[in-house]
Amino acid sequence: MVNSESDLESLLARVLQVEEQVELRKKNISWLKQYFDDLKVAFDNRPELSILASLSATVSQQVLQIASLEQQLANLVPSGNIVAEKAIASPVIPEVQATVTAPDIPETADMEVQEEFSRAFTDTEFQLERIFWLVNRLYAAEADNQAIPISAEEFLQRYKREDRDFTGINLAGVNLSSQSLVQVNFTGANFKNANLSQADLRHANLTEANLDNVNFSKVLLDSEVKLKGASFIKANFCEAYLERVDFTEVNLSGANFSKVNRTYRINLSRANLTNANLSKANFSSEANFSGANLSEADLSNACLKTANLIGANLSHANLSNANLLKANLEDANLEGANLQQAIFDLETRFPKDFNPIEAGASLIAPNASLVNANLVGADLSQLNLTGVNLRNANLVAANLSSTNLTGANLSNANLVATNLSSTNLTGANLNNTNLNQAYLRSAQIIDANLRNANLSEANLSYANLSGSNLWEANLMQVNLEQANLMATDLRHANLRNAITIQTNFSNANLAEANLIGASFYNCNLGGADLSNVQLGDTNLNNANLSGANLTGANLLNASLQNANLEDANLTEATGVDLGEGKNQPKLKNTIMPDGTVHE
Image (cartoon, rainbow, N blue to C red; front, side):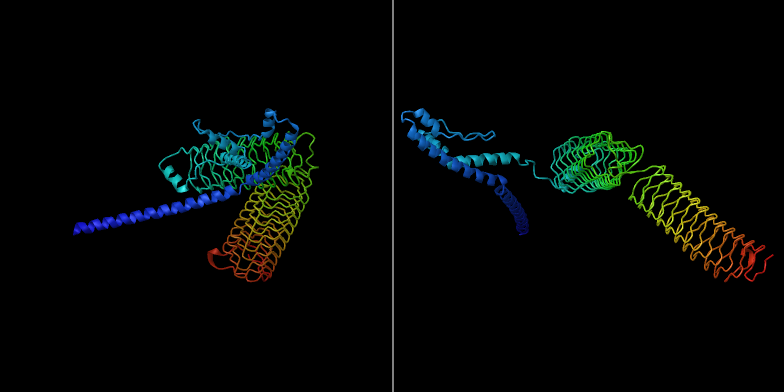
């Protein structure tokens, strides 16, 4: 009885297994049916059919014309001339340029069958059917005969089994984003429409691979990647890592390199980049475009600083606002190219007899006039721009680090989030300039005019602003850590919540400035004018206020522990709390709020 139950359970399990297999086959058959139905629809809608329909009508007309001619000639030619009659009665069918195997007729076939076949072959309908068959053969020969693409799962299983040779594999449309594909051989592989974003393809072999329409955004390539003969038509390289990658003679037409930044010594010599998008890309580190075809490419706002463009085809390319500083464009084709507001310098080389100024480009050089120039994001670092006129210019997010702007006119310019670290702005005119969130660390801004300038949230740590005019300037939440503001004019300036760690304000004029929320811990305010200033709740611990003018200042709840107030003037100051004990401020010769002098 036990054995019977066990056999029954085994039989049931087998039945269930068979049912699962049958269900799977049903799904496969359903998929195949749909697949072939789609093929049939595509086959029936071929453009050749309309052409053949037109051809059929033409052939029918010709047959009727031949029949008419035969009748006319029969009346003219003697009936005994059989050779001539046969020659006229056999119209010539134009040859189709294709190798076709003629239908085999067995030698042992009956003569009647052969005569019937001969009569059928000369029939107009059969001739049209033969043309249809030939066209179908040609259509099939041109169709993509690669295998059905394998899935990402199947590929990754093989990869995990340490299979690294995938020559000729069809991975069209698969998603391999973020996968490590280091040192894999993809010679002749088909990746069309695949997603390889953020994949690691270092040392991979992509020789002769089809990479059209592939998503390479944020992909990692290196100098060892083999790309000879590969096709990247309309591929997306947005934000890809492409340092030292060799794209020599590769087809990149329509590819997207927008905002690419890691391109150190990228080689695109003789590459096909027609209609490619390189807008806002950074090719500033010795990029090689020599002999490349960039016709109708979008290079607007691209940085091509020091790039090699010798002999490149830039016809009808968009180079508006491009950075061409120190670039070499000798023998390049610039016919119809747009260079409006592109920038170049005295080291930029153009084709013979080409005038960049007439083409709308701007010269970046000492004393140059760049009034109203659009230089958003431009790399102008480490240049000599003494005396340049940048009034009303747009320099948002530009890089001006270590540039010499001595005596430059930047009045009313927009420098929001601009990098001005270690920049020399001595004697520069920055009146009404917007420097919100600008990075000015270690900048030299001596004797500059910053009246009414907006420096809110700017970083001025370690900067030297001595002697500068900051009257009514907005310095709210500015970082002035260890900055030098000696003898600056900060009257009516807004320093609310400013960071002033160990800042030097000696002899600065801060009369009626807004200092609410600012901390002057360990700052040097010796000899500073702080008359009528709001210093309520301010931290002035350890600050040097010797000789400072604090007449009429509001010091309510201000902390003055260990501060130096020697020779300071506190006449009519309010809210002064000098504390008690050893942490009291130094008060030698201090003029107290009531006018008395502390001994």
